[in-house]
Length: 303
Image 1: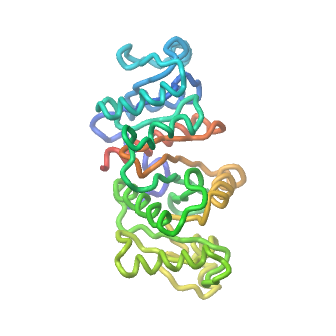
Image 2 (image 1 turned 180 degrees about the vertical axis):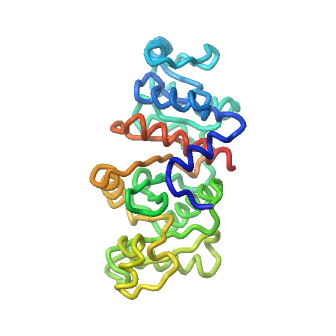
């Protein structure tokens, strides 16, 4: 299956027999708890809240969020809240983690700890679903929030992370576009060389479960009409499921262009860990946080 929009994803998650348990680290944040309340009201999640208990209870009372006392863990310090949240996952008390009012580095430190963290041996990467006004389905962009300048091997891991996540959502053989400024390999442009290398890995069976194209420009990846005009023949052209960006700068700018300029919606989390890590930015709206909860719940249920 291919998800056309977030409404389809929301209805899919609402049909699950029981809500998924989300552990919220440093949960004393109004936007975060507003998103949790909406997801609770729709039967999507059951919250386990870690943070300043007095602050959590104050916000929860103000927005009408009911949480069982046993599901609130009093850890006022952000670093301790992050560490306790990871421990709760190991104890089986949650299905995935959500970042509340703390720095990204504070939640990632216990997550990536080699002895007590949630690593799997692969790199962790940022997976984002974008809902665009004029594209015919949800579009994945990766990685604009975790890996800064990934190597070829790290890009391979990012693709594997992404494909496994999409498979958990019911996708079969998603189409991956390794984007660059040009469509031909140019030794002076490393991203074109690596895009071609990833394509060859796919062709020789080293990366499976998807169709990889590259180097390919963004306009060709998203528009069949432009692909035809430029004479670019590929099943990915005009129908990409995934945009693999060459580095975090491109991913960050592309993501913000989608939400700020194109007025698109997005949802995202960190993949490649034992459980999804919902890691929205400080400027994220309650809606974005809610959609990210929906996405993480759907992926958790599919694994």
